[in-house]
Structure formats: structure tokens, C-alpha cells
Image (cartoon, rainbow, N blue to C red):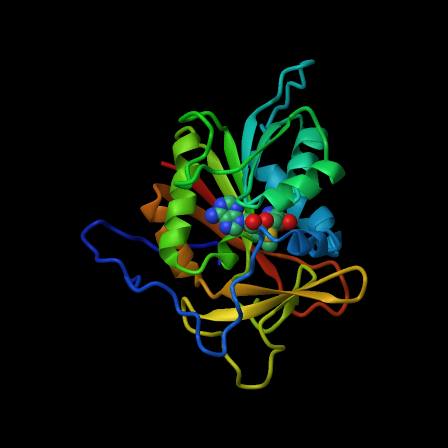
Length: 271
Ligand SMILES: C[S@@+](CC[C@H](N)C(=O)[O-])C[C@H]1O[C@@H](n2cnc3c(N)ncnc32)[C@H](O)[C@@H]1O
């Protein structure tokens, strides 16, 4: 699915329901990412896929084609939106000479992450009470998002989060995300079981519907989280509403035997 991207125009009404989401009676309880127990469990996440596949692909999209690597001067300023513990932020700072603004709504994630990942160019912050980022307009040369959009319950939350990122990006800057996509639901991808294991005839839930994503942890247990099914069309429309152009979406190959689904890379440009 790297060909024609969905096109939108302002004359078209949004497909999104104005209703607030859908936590179906049998749906998962919302995940409290601010709970220290959630952060502690998340720290045990199996990160092989991140390190081997997702982080290199995300880094390739936001690092400059010709790095300068001048002493004391980062090669760019990247926003890591929904950074969690900040492993990706640390990778971008330490391996790619980038100053990284690691933003997350969870102080617990930041606290624990600060013990695990430290770098002078890794700058952590919370959004303010209205969701605004503590960054200047056009300050960032790129933005990365990994496994955050899938945990937002409604398209309007995606538009708000992406719109916040757009404000701090300069025009033409890339925003790149790793998220579930076609075929991810029902499978194991990136050490996460997305929804119920696939059964014959079972299709993905409808756009906007909740399900459970189970993160595999290195102690053999799983972290149950609330996820929402956002179709590629829905993500493309959210990007467009937030003033991005979706340039590409492609599956990220799993190197591990036995994996049966994949995560997707969405690459967009700030317009
Ligand atoms: C599944 S974790 C992903 C963390 C990290 N990106 C990674 O790949 O390991 C989702 C993260 O998104 C954060 N989050 C959820 N909604 C957010 C929002 N509106 N703005 C910033 N962070 C958010 C949560 O606190 C949580 O740390």
C-alpha cells in the first residue's frame, strides 16, 4: 500500500462520528498510563522488534541525509510524541546526533524512563493542561510517534495530538509513525497481540471500535491495554485535518520466526 494515498478536500464532511467513543460494554477498561504499575510493567516489554526494525525505520525518516555531527551541535530537533520511557528518544539522541523532545502525558513513564535512559540531548516534558507542547512554533525538524495513536479512543484525539505536533514542526518536516495497519488486528506484531488471535472468518473490528492489545513482557506475563481500531483511511484523514500530507504507508517486516502480522510505517509531511 505504497501507491495512491487517500485524497480529502475541505468540501467533504468528516466521516468521523461526533460522538465520543465507544467503550463497548465488553470492551477493555481504559489504560491508566499514568499509573506507576503500568509504567513498571511497560518497562519489561520485549523490545527486540523496536531495536531491530522500528527504531531504524523511524530514525531513517527524521535524520538529515548528510549528518554534520559538529561537536555540541545536534543535527536536528525531533519530537517524540507519546515517548513512553524514552527508549526511542535515547536511540535518536545517542546514535543519530539529534536533540529529542520526549513528550508524554504520563509522569510515571517519565520518572521511570529517566532512570533507564539519560542523555543531555534527551529533553523530557509533559503537555500542559490543555494538551499544548512546551515547544516553539516550527522548532522541530521532524517528529516520531510509536504505538500512541492506537491507544487514543477517538479520531478527534488523534487530530488534537497530531495538530499539536504540526504546530512545533517547520513546513516540509517529516512526521513518521509506527502503528497497527491492515492485517495487524488478530495477529502478533512487535511482541504485541493485537486483539483476539485470528480465527477463520474473523475480521477486524469496525473503524473506531475498542479492543485489547496485549504487550508481551520479558517475565512471561502480558500487559493488557485498551486499543482502538483506526483504519488507514481514518489515520490519513486525521493527518490531513492536522495539516499533514500522508506520503507513504508500508508494512515493517518482522525478522522473528512465527510472527504472523506486521506493524506499519506511516510517513507524512507537514504542509
Ligand atoms: C504504548 S505506549 C508507547 C510508548 C513509546 N512510544 C514506545 O513505543 O515504547 C503509549 C504512550 O503514549 C502516551 N500517551 C497517550 N496519550 C498521549 C497524548 N495525548 N500525548 C502524549 N502521550 C500520550 C502514554 O502515556 C504512553 O506512554
